[in-house]
Length: 157
Image (cartoon, rainbow, N blue to C red; front, side):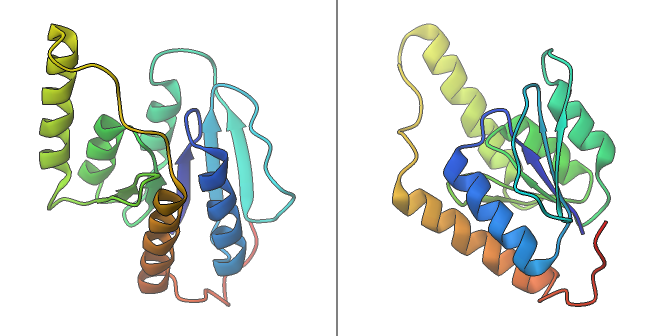
């Protein structure tokens, strides 16, 4: 299992949770962004800077996936692609996107985009709160417990 992070818009508090979990569970984790992203020194953490462009980081993540991987992203279209690749996506507010629910989330996102474009609705989601970070951490820990355990046999990359 590998954790991939769509790091362009990933909040720092979420990255910190991911860094701690990756080290604790010994899961290789790669952050993709079109800018430099600093990661703590660890055999489990990597940062890859991709060229600028629309969805370049997303394309690199999808191309790198293996079934069972976990992707951290707030991008619902990317989450849908991840699920199509037999993987799971987790957003920074703690929502786990799976084959059972991603289409519903994508439909809701598309509807809200249409409403914003027509002027019927303005603004986006509220700022990330401490309870959102806690929900994310809880969901990540539960997912890793189910799919990795303590991973004591994992070798550093």
